[in-house]
Length: 276
Length: 350
Image 1 (cartoon, rainbow over the protein chains, first blue to last red):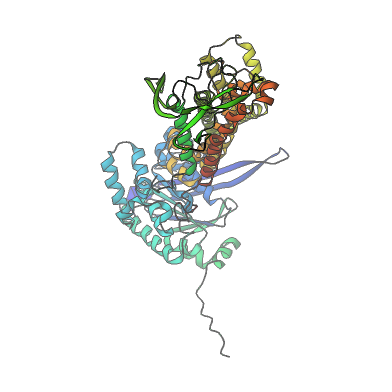
Image 2 (image 1 turned 30 degrees about the vertical axis):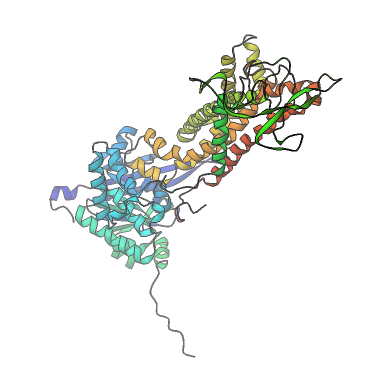
């Protein structure tokens, strides 16, 4: 998966340094309270690799994702993408960067405009590019559907008529349309049932090897993170408290929060009922 | 839309009612300004099928009215003079839709005049005046609602989407306008203008005033919809594809507001027609001889009319189905607000 060229291999695709994002929380009394959602986070991701960020809800994972996707401006710190700082760009430049860093959301109910058909949804990023003809857009959109395992006959369906797994496939197809180099999966598997989770996870692995994709996998599920990622970062209260290869995190957890997350992973146990 | 919807009964009612007003020239027997000074305050003529001797007629007829002996305003039917109704007759010339010259009327009688809704103090046919007056009043209501919703849409979209100081400024302004006693504002505005304004000027003035006072409520509603819509993931996703603000508003956010706007329109139109009526009732509306629903009812300001000529209330009664139609349609639109909720069958709300 990793690029054989030595120089490229050494150059990280994404480098986040001391990233901070805080929100002002206005209280009824008129006082302003600063809430630090992300509080000094640093990491690097190499091309073709997967970094998993694991943490409880409210630990700042989603804010991190929005900052990285250029959808929120960080309060301080910087984000380097392909060697250039993208955290302080003007809106117009951010717009072009956004296309290369795509985000997939957890909630399939609000990921799509409920009035649009499957084809319209996949075609939207292509149409927004503005350089393709209608026929080209249609052909490419159908090809994308096929790549993620959706049949082209579904093109006229509404998102409400798809299953949860089909919707997440649709979201992946749409995110791939602009051929991004980084895909951020923000709890993308969390709303799915177990067997569908496995199918989508396999699809993600296949796409990674086929397209040399770089993933930032955000989840609360340590087991799935360990299955997909080359490296895991555990987040708590806006900070990364532990980071390392999956083996190390699973076998020698260093912090309490990691042990708690590990304990939350469901295990197969065969508890036979006692013979009466 | 992809899902076929049952045609609303309210909509059909409204279309039929509006057709009679739009083609007022055809449906009304006379010109609304045509006076018949010999017959002021004539009561409505009853349509008969059976004459005074008990004989049945296939063609409906009315009796002409004559003064009751010894009175000056009590009429009685002159049973010796039946006036059979004639359909599709040629009569006073008019312009259909304001363009096509025509003389054809739905009904009429020969030699005499027919007054199905009675006549006013100048002997003008109330039915004709009602239908022509509807053109003015309904158009004022529709245009007023259009202006209001357009302003409300723009203000609400800017306030909700861009937020910050724009939001604060626009919403404080909206609150100010909501608290304004608009009738007195109108008086002040009217006092500012010369005493005699042409009917067209007065018409535009009414629409401007209705729009100026009405935008605040739809603006607040649209702002609410925009606020929740812009946080949806599909809007974020589209921004991720490099969408501009204009694109997001046009394609994703404002369509969310369309059902709110339609519902508002259905509520605002009758409200504005009523406002126009209030203005005309107070003599601030479209001046005579141009009829409007308000000026039709303004004769009720005199106690003698109020007490003696009950048929002068009839126009108000006939307006009811118009207003009910709009309000019924509004209620129906509100129920259909979210037709495609994920997790439900499309149109599952019906």
